[in-house]
Image 1 (cartoon, rainbow, N blue to C red):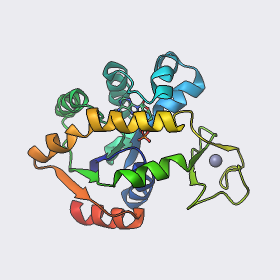
Image 2: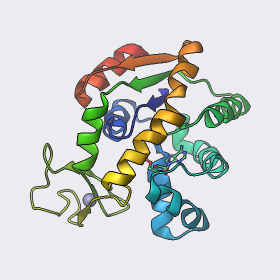
Image 3: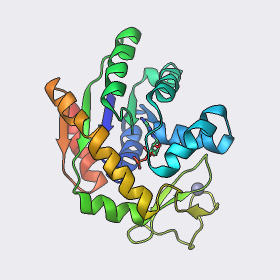
Length: 214
Ligand code: ADP
Ligand code: ZN
């Protein structure tokens, strides 16, 4: 599959990507994960991106596009790919159209996770993420706690609240989504590529997405 997952922060794009990937081995391309790894590794890209991310603002398009092009050229993307958290702006979507045309790749669909605002707010404030860059497992203090408090079940490293998951940064991320990213819903709808899914459980979302793609 060659798809884009669209939806507000906290819609479950990461979880759904993980499950879709098990389905057909497509590469999971999360620009947020790539950026967080760059911040941890202290690369030039990471240093430039960190301040934007901590505020809940978008990282400039120019930094993102270089990163995405490099990633798309890696061999695992030949099977397929799932974009999670990209594109985030109309200019990114337009540049992606050009990039895909250049690489002679065709998208199958854009899956829009259509989740009420109150649900995403609640999910984000209770979310915890494994601090190990190679793991990044996601937990939720209410609905999916770790077995031992504060320790990742999978790798034993501490789980943390992301620095952009304070209440203030979360509200800013939602605002940023509404202003800059939600226009993509119309953008892809007009191209006839949009499939909206309103289910709240990731299992149901995955089932509906697979049905929509076949
Ligand atoms: P979420 O979907 O939970 O908001 P992500 O992990 O996708 O979080 O992204 C975290 C942060 O990384 C964003 O708030 C933003 O600063 C930056 N980021 C990720 N993807 C992009 C992108 N495509 N364009 C610009 N900034 C991005
Ligand atoms: Zn872990």
